[in-house]
Length: 298
Image 1 (cartoon, rainbow, N blue to C red):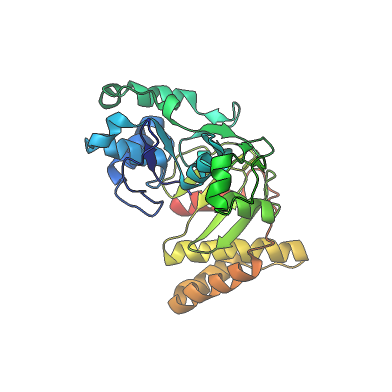
Image 2 (cartoon, rainbow, N blue to C red):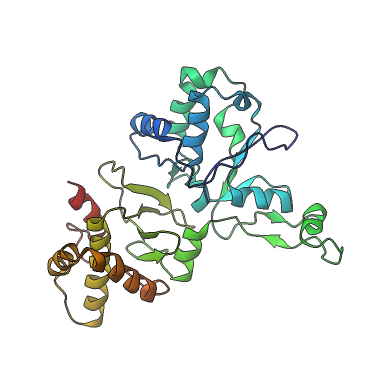
């Protein structure tokens, strides 16, 4: 999922894999967010690349291919330098209309003086972007040997566009259509809701990624007690409403804030119970529940 794997023209890894949990890219993420007027999280591949440029790391000039861990596995199995659009949206912002990297932002990045000194163009070193349903390649002989050293596994199997766990969760909960969403509780707790229109402002707390069908969705990871309780409120409001009864979110939130220990425990219990089948039913176009984070931040 996201992160930074940079290779030279011989396919050699230039620096150790920098994972999505690596937090050395604060300066780059902040600068790119201002340049693009679009939130660039620290874990995104473009943030790692730009931070390496700002740090004047020697390996940058030798980059021939940049990808994520999922893209690397597919490359080694098939020889194809591709990514599913969901994972690609954590490499660089995606244009929902073209289903490819946002050209205007690509041009802005390539125009930076500190970038122009390098021999590559950003588009040339990024993986190709594929939506769900497209063929990402076939298992080749080299890839078959990696999976089965005995040689019994034959080449030729079709390979789907590589995706991360977020897209897997969206598909498994049938939350890929607009105005649907899901909540996950794994290595982190986060909510994802598929937008039916672009967000009006940039919020550093909300990561904009895409579904496997190239619809935009905000990815909100709560980091404070208040944010966790708000996330729990969304679960506890929309699901009961779908079942035919109501629950006051403010009462629930106040209760959580007054009982800090319960704030930590209650959302985990609810999220664990609902992780495989939660749909957020959004009815009011002028007061979208998926923008609850915006109201909280403002």
